[in-house]
Amino acid sequence: MLWLSKNDLKNFFGEVTRNVAKELNVSEWEWLFHSELLEQIKAQDSMVARKLESFFSVYKNCHNFHVKVEKEGRAGKLSLTENDELQTLISVRHVAREALLKELRK
Image 1 (cartoon, rainbow, N blue to C red):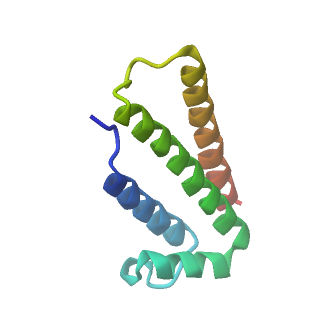
Image 2 (cartoon, helix red, strand yellow):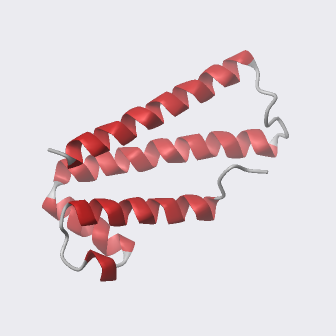
C-alpha cells in the first residue's frame, strides 16, 4: 500500500501552508483558502515563498517515486540504483524542509 496518497499529500501541503502563514503572522490565516494564504505568503516574504515552493516540489518528487514503485509492484524490492535514488530524494527533502524552517526563523 502506498505510504502517502495524493490526497494525504494535498492535506499535508495545506497544513504546511497554514503553519507558514501562522509563523509569518498572516492576518486571519485560519479563515483563508490555501491559495489565498500562498498569495499572502508570497507578498509578505518572497524568500519564504520560494523555499515553500521548493519544499512542495521535493515532496512531490518523493511521492512520485513511491507511486512509480508501487505501480510496478516493487515496494520493498528496489535495486541498488533505485535505493540510492530514494536516499537522495529523502536527503533533498530533508534539506528543503530545513531551509524552509531556517528562513522562517530569521
